[in-house]
Length: 200
Image (cartoon, rainbow, N blue to C red; front, side, top):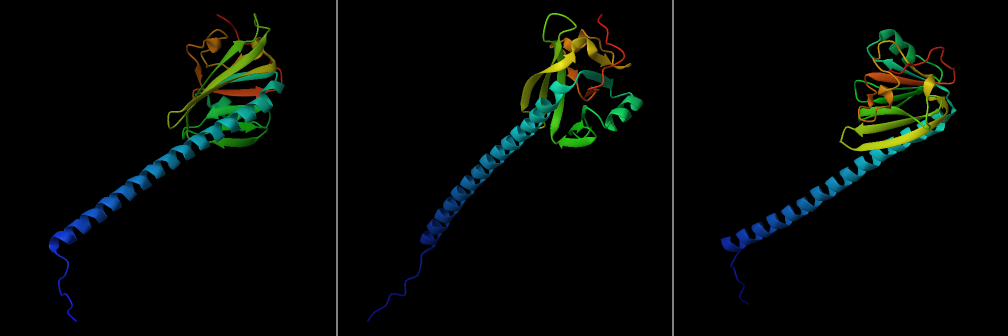
């Protein structure tokens, strides 16, 4: 019986290698695409979860408060007081892009929050109307989410603007120039303020 001693030719070897490279490239492309989709979906889910946590916290707490105070982040005394507060709800944006929601002395932190802006509007026709708190949260990846809450027990006139904020009742209701939470921290509480903000 005769057996062939003929091996694989160079051309066949090159073709085989080329096919292997093509298949490996296609598999890699599919894998990378899948990873991108998974990462994007995961980031979107995490972002939505952070916003849901924020909204749940605000909607659960804010309507019960009858006082609000805006404090300049450049005032060390006021900032220290707010950060150590054991009553009410304090909102501020830390330098490391962490949104801190401090309620009754306990901190809840949301990471990757690039910016938070807010305004107070009158849920009625005058300063004695209830205050509506509107906010926009911008995450580090560029996504933005907005919301609004009518703070049932808070009268617009009872929003206190601490010394040094440079704000008035008119400016805090200017939707064209919302207040930055990084420069103006915010506290809601159940203790009625002793002073009132002024309009220009």
